[in-house]
Length: 374
Image 1 (cartoon, helix red, strand yellow):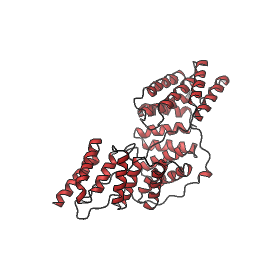
Image 2: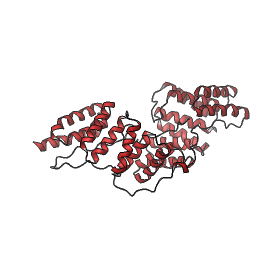
Image 3: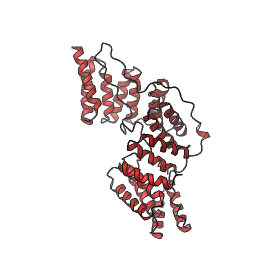
Image 4: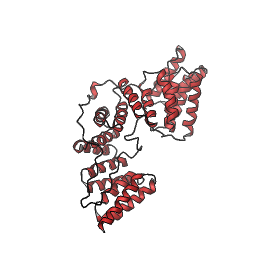
């Protein structure tokens, strides 16, 4: 069952607004173009071809590792069912293991992780915040870890559940113990990397996500996660290399194309960024952030009319996408005839997210523009 934890591009800033809004043009006679996200860097070497990489490893951490032949046979069948996505069969198998060996952790861990999977189909950080079923499962996993402290998967599954609940510090503590016990599991390193990133330890996160990729180089999720943390640390060419490999591995994944396009955009490589951002929309036309990102690319390139069209498309899909309102305002502010509409767009963004500092900064710039006009 392909349930590797996946990072979202620019997660350090937000989880669903990948594009940073350009500032409203200043009050100078000739308003400047939006500031590029990043300086141009050398083109990285070509990414390896997907067919040259090994098949991705299962993301399910096997629980059939107790040393008890009969128990492991039951757990192995449940592990197989879980990896195949047959949650009911997996739950029945794990529950049978729990009842047959109540003093061992594995069965309880299996039951809890099935419950987490059923309750939280999305694997984003804090995606199941305050979810009662995931909260209960996390407590069950804590008890399982205390029951058998040498059983690494208990700590890994507890940490993954805590990440879904948004408790990064506790997740980090559990995952560190799990990684020490099962150092050969790519998903363990990946989950710890996500927890470290969520607690602001991006350098340590990079090390863990690099290890996850080394253990599972054919996994698109591992490549994408590593690309994201590289991007966040300013290593844009290296990030592009990982995203390019991810796109080769999963050519129909809209998020992969979007992330690659955004990274290429950070180098002002419009020639290659625009096709990736357009492809993301072709694959998932109802994702508002994809339209906003393409609009941002157009605006950086100076195609303000095209940018406005994409921002409006994004807001038609998701009227609460604050960054699209801000970006729309910056585009509208270039024309004195549409500055009133730009101001209203910024007020709308402020109502959606009163804490966003970009709104205040852009309103101040808009005030300066209006004073300059007068």
